Amino acid sequence: MSNKLGVKSNQSVKPQTMRRVAFASFVGTAIEYYDFYIYGTAVALVFPRVFFPEMTPLLATLASFATFAVAFISRPIGAAIFGHFGDRLGRKKTLVATLLIMGLSTVAVGLVPDAATIGIAAPIILLTLRVLQGFAVGGEWAVSALLSAEYAPAGKRGMYGMFTQLGVGTGLVLTNLVFLTVNVTIGEQNEGFMNWGWRLPFLFSAVLVIVALYVRLNIEETPVFREEKQKRTLATKAPLGELFRTSP
Image (cartoon, rainbow, N blue to C red; front, top):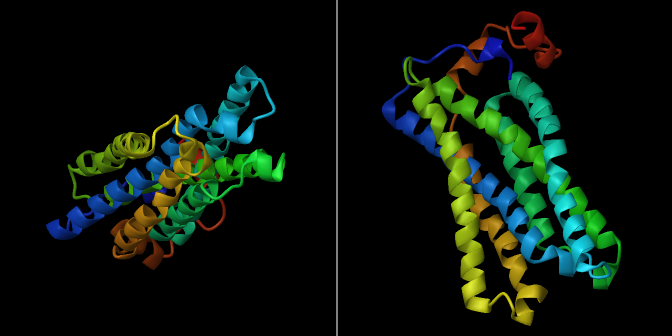
């Protein structure tokens, strides 16, 4: 995000509006990171056998974790691109986009046929969806933190900005609770878990995304962005380039 659009604090936001914005940042980030982390859990428990059955256990595990790692390559790319459009189109629109990309990618992971059904296409599709997850979560964190900070009154930007980070930890806890529930009710060693049970946490993401989408659609664009737009001082070409020129 361009420094030019993120340095001001708002003094006139009502407390109930600020609570709603903080909650939107928290819930949206928690659900996006839930999506991000359930993939990591499935990588260890499921994917070696489901998507790499022809490999030795060691190679299958390495290949599975390699698909996990690619998200950390696409993540900074997503941060740069969504930062660019966040400065030009607005924080709210950008956050809705990251949420939808992450949610749809995660649900799609739960629908990918196994390698026994469609062969090598299965891990390729899986890898593509993981790239999209990393792309979305790269934009989510920065824009979400900026949303709270730009709404926050002077002297409280750090306090309200923390709700994004709280969402990250909450997403991790939620991931483990959901997988634990599936494990207890179906059983990790049960054949049903490997056939369809592992897909439930991914499909459950659809419900969570609808909740987060509702929350985010019911907040307004940040006062800072609206002010810059009204003054026609938005970055129109390359916000990232402007950042390095004005704040090296």
